[in-house]
Length: 124
Image 1 (cartoon, helix red, strand yellow):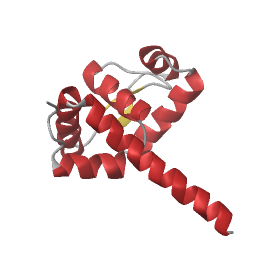
Image 2 (cartoon, one colour; image 1 turned 90 degrees about the vertical axis):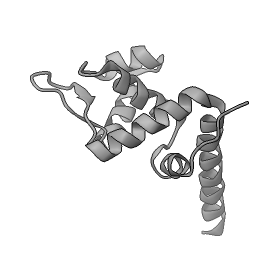
Image 3 (tube, helix red, strand yellow; image 1 turned 180 degrees about the vertical axis):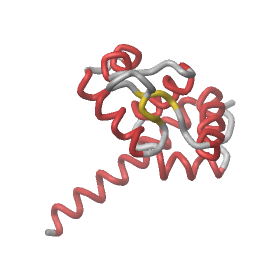
């Protein structure tokens, strides 16, 4: 039986996690500790092309999850503020126990946004 997704984690996923690749990048960097990533390293770790990895890196930076790595041009490291880091830790634990449930929650959000975008295009 899958573990339930706690309400605070559910809200965080719905508000802050736009895609499964974003979550996977976030968790990969979290697990790497002080290791710095560039687009090539992130792409290799996630089996993505470098362009997609670069986009994920920009999104993570904008969300305050990463920071430039000292002395490593073009590289970033996992460096969220304490409250965000605590929520990411909670999400990582829930995801480890209920990968399918969290993934489905992310996809359900994407589906709603896609339907809303389609309606907006037809409505114009």
